[in-house]
Amino acid sequence: MFPVLLPLLAQANTLLSRLTAGRATNLDNLDAAVSAISPIVSVQYGTIGMAGSTVAATATIATVGSKAVLHLLGTNRNSVASTVGAGEVQITLTNPTTVTATRSETGGIVSASFCVVNYK
Image 1 (cartoon, rainbow, N blue to C red):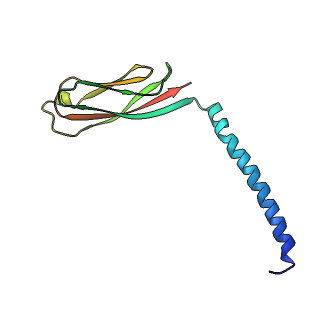
Image 2 (image 1 turned 135 degrees about the horizontal axis):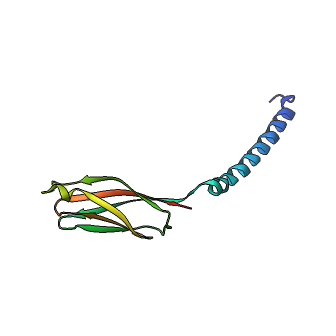
Image 3 (image 1 turned 90 degrees about the horizontal axis):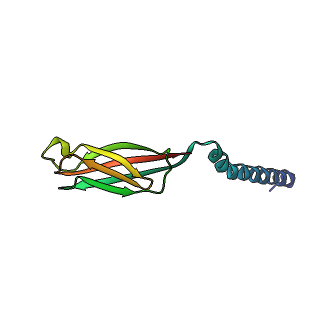
């Protein structure tokens, strides 16, 4: 290597290590900064399945507060249901740790995907 470039290389390494150290510190604080201003506490996803003669089923989630919002993302009928009501699913947040899916009629295999957003 050229002897003239050695001092420049040392300076470049020093500068790079300082920039990297500063960037790591800023990134470490980023999660805390975003958490402080975000209105969202948590987001949870799940799926509830019902087969045959089942008209209701539940899923357990981590505890949410009174400002939590439940979203039905979609349903999937995996086999032919004998009636329309067998494929129509409603979901409710039964309590802070339980999501319940219900349907008015039996028949076929149906799954419902959901999302619970817990707000501050």
